[in-house]
Length: 387
Image (cartoon, rainbow, N blue to C red; front, side, top):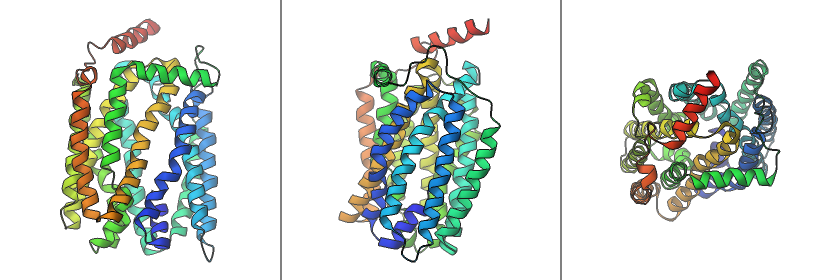
């Protein structure tokens, strides 16, 4: 999250070179993310997670070796980034699809919040500490620590119980993949979650600019905080998220949260104090977490388990393609204009496009977990299985 863009920035000092990470990751993520969803519905989800985590450790080791060469290869960094994206695509559908198998239907919003805290802790501590280590010492040391943490992760994952596929699961095949895609597009409420998040992330994702932003504010020491700020805001929302389980209008919550994300990003681009910038990045992260909690609730409370893996693959693409293409957009606009214009214009475009999408998606805008037919169906299935 920190080492790759920082290393490329040090090697090239180019907005476009850093933004190109998103370009090389995009196609592998689409292909392996969709197929990873098919595999998650056919094979043991815990085993798929373990194998892909091991692959990530091997790739991090390759980055470490490249970083200690007298002349680190830029091409090798891009190739490994693409492979990372492929491995991530295989893992995340299984990771996302496990939760509905572990907790009761009505507890899913709370479980999503707890899982968010787990993720956020790593995203705050990792970039904050990693940014200091990489900026003060070297990217090589950052990669060494990352390899060690992957080893620890593998040990813990080995102790997790197996989560085999359900009896209804399809064999891995293109037909099974298209069945999941057809189901997703037949549900206008699900389609709304994908489109709103895609628009928000494409127009207002400034992460590729963080290494340059810290330099521009004469605060190179703050690089890790740039990456962690959004997650700090997310944690604050998560720790106070008890109200999420009681708020039934999930579509409205996602729409207003996406608008809040764009507005906070737009403001961050026009202020010149590092601490004020970090504050608005944290506010953006808080808005994004509200959106994420309600999107996860819609997904986990309405999608049948036999389709959950494939739909998790589609969900992963919806919240991953946006940031990847958004980084490219931010880098290109910053190259053509300036960093500030890139950030602020992206935030404003986010607000405009989310508002337009909401006006064209009445089913999503009116989504009510108490009356939605798919939520009711899944709730009844859980009750019957418990009886």
